[in-house]
Length: 166
Image (cartoon, rainbow, N blue to C red; front, side, top):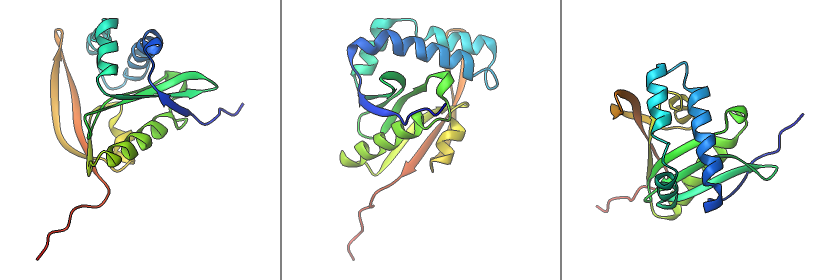
């Protein structure tokens, strides 16, 4: 069976419960090789407040990728030059969902005047961002509950850089 290419649409408030379940499922199922059970539990717990999650999604430019009308993933552009969230339904990883979302955010960021885009990539997402031309800038850890989670700040420059006049 062939899976259709993802379509993109703006985030809608009615998406919150489904996207929250998708996020938790994605963390639980996809992070097992990179993070300990305690780290995964703390990460999932950080997505326990539906109201806070809805506010976070609404605070940026959030796109939802759909396949056959059902949400398959989402990503958020925070400000004009930071990818704040990128999650894909576990059963749809490596099907072009994340690529379609990031390509759209890159175009939107460029249209907003950004010449580079950054992301705090989890250890799970780092290979994806590397394959798309993002370069590691720094390695960081953040506290979540009683755990510490590592991520890498990745950056990609694009578009035309302003030239200096001589």
